[in-house]
Image (cartoon, rainbow, N blue to C red; front, side, top):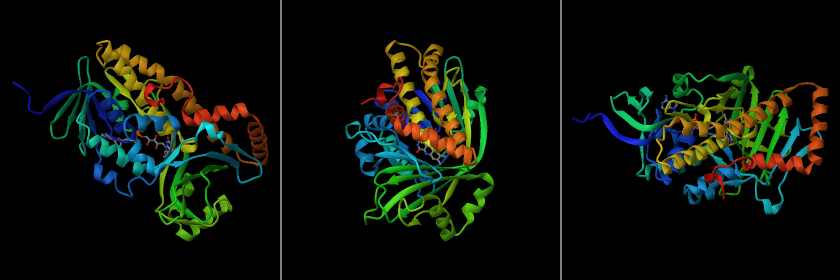
Amino acid sequence: MTDPARTDRRDLLILGGGLVGMTLALAAARKGLTSHLVDRADPKSMLEAGFDGRASAISTASWRLFRNIGLADTLEPFGCHIDSIAVVDQMKPGRIDFRPDIHEGSLGRMFANRQLRTALYEAVQAEDAITLHAPVIVKDRDAGEFVATATLEDGTVLTADLLVGAEGRGSPTREEAGLAMARWDYSHRAIIAGLDHTKRHDNIAWEIFYPDGPFALLPLLDKDDGTHRSALVWTVDEKDAAGSLKMGDRAFTAEVQKRMGDILGTVTLNSVRSSYPLAFQHTARIVGQRMALVGDSAHGMHPIAGQGLNLGLRDVGALVEVLLEARRLGLDLGDAQVLAKYEKWRALDAAMVMTATDSLTRLFGIPGKAASAARRLGMAGVQQSGMLKKLFMDEARGITGDTPELLKA
Ligand SMILES: Cc1cc2nc3c(=O)[nH]c(=O)nc-3n(C[C@H](O)[C@H](O)[C@H](O)COP(=O)(O)OP(=O)(O)OC[C@H]3O[C@@H](n4cnc5c(N)ncnc54)[C@H](O)[C@@H]3O)c2cc1C
């Protein structure tokens, strides 16, 4: 007799349908792997305007992944190219310009997270190989010797060959697997807002470093009426965050304008403000018995370099590639050696990006004139060095190291 609550067995059981979880389900499906995709949030509320007002810098490699899984036509009209990145210490003289040669292409594209989420959700809905279960509550997860299962609150038991934790920073899959995690709090919050401005951004992403944290201006496409727009990510001390959020629009805009000078002309707010706590967290072990982690479940970093999602998308490319190879060889997708290969592949990239991001945050956070002078001297050195600049730009594009096939041209 069959158990009516037990659904068909899939290749993957992905817990967490955020940007990384949805991309994994789609990338796997395009290569013939089936999945259950599970999220506790209601997809409709996740697509609402106020749910996630952030914009993400999508690297060249991540864009190739979206293109390779069939999202280019949907997303292309929304992407704003980043042609160069300007790095400044507190608006003082001397800056580094990361501007690639014309034949090298842009440094990435900016997308509103809402646009990414909508495109992914619509593609997931249209894909037969994916069954989306949302909103649901997962009561139990089990990655056993022979099968991975998740029991939902209504008693439904989802089964698959491999359990994937994609629930973000607080991943219960990671917690239950008992994987040790390095974590520290930056005692900072990122305040997010949308800005209209009178001058063109010329597709430049600005990183202006203040001792409290970076102040980033990220280019977005002009509105239909020609109004210029950018996304603001302003890192403030945790103790100042509530005040910055409560400030009236005019006072807030005046503070913003003070920190960015006349770069973009006169600015006005075009959205509500929201904030995100900032912490570093990293697990060296990202696999367990019949289980793997992807995205922020495995690594959460400061948004200073816009690398969190890009790193998660590289997890996706690597995991799918390793699983396809296992399938070709007739191996079980939850096989320990298959998962060990995924973990080894991702280890160096994740450690490097995490360390570089953390060092940058600390370096520019050192207060005082002497530190600022030393930094500007270092920046002048980088500005002169074509080789160093190329290295940084390749890193920003996500094309260094052993790139998974799905993220190649
Ligand atoms: C201010 C800011 C700016 C950023 N800018 C950039 C950028 O420019 N470029 C970049 O690459 N990265 C950027 N990042 C990082 C990026 O946003 C994250 O790395 C990325 O969103 C992580 O996606 P995820 O799918 O792994 O996790 P999440 O987005 O956290 O998604 C997790 C999903 O799991 C679901 N979930 C959670 N718990 C459960 C559960 N128990 N059961 C079922 N479902 C569950 C949630 O509902 C959610 O849908 C930024 C981050 C911040 C804070």
